[in-house]
Length: 238
Image (cartoon, rainbow, N blue to C red; front, side, top):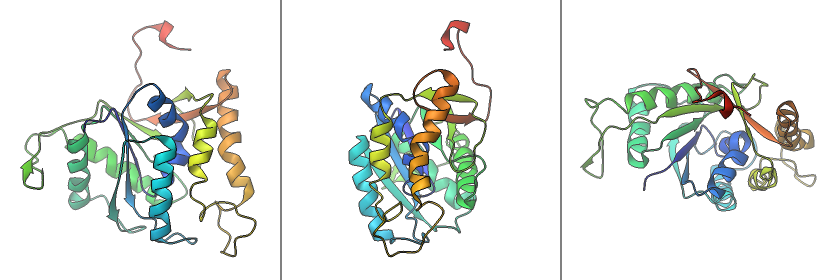
């Protein structure tokens, strides 16, 4: 299956929090979108790897994502090396996305910055014909995505561009809240974490509302790029 967009996150829920509304919008326009989680989030304070698996599948259904896979890298300890790069290259070549969305370039959680660089490097290397990979014995052809964009996460990074996601924020919030073990629950007996407060859950909407305010729409999501973003005409800018 060829995908238009492949969204990759270090942990289940990264994609939903970072670009869930953008994904929902593109799916509504007929785009084929997939998600790859690098780890199962097994070091998370709340919940377990098994509950995260269930929650991730529920979030996939809510967003309407075509396929979701987990590479089962070691949460907190994966590194940007040849072994990990080759594994990601296999999936880039398998799904041949035109656009890859990945973790924030810099963020509070160490896996986010690591995951960002790892995926970006793999996207470049995936286009090199002399790097040989196969899945189930079938040799893969090289493939390099046209664009790699980094969604914004915990830190308030200055976006290089923003996407109007008005009309899709409710779908994003629903997908985020599918991770019942991770986010605010007044009846939970689990330890509190930086993302388990009601303030954090509320921030999913109010941060999108603030970005929307800055571009004159109701809601927006921001992204960073590693190279100049180009337009064909001045009139392409809103």
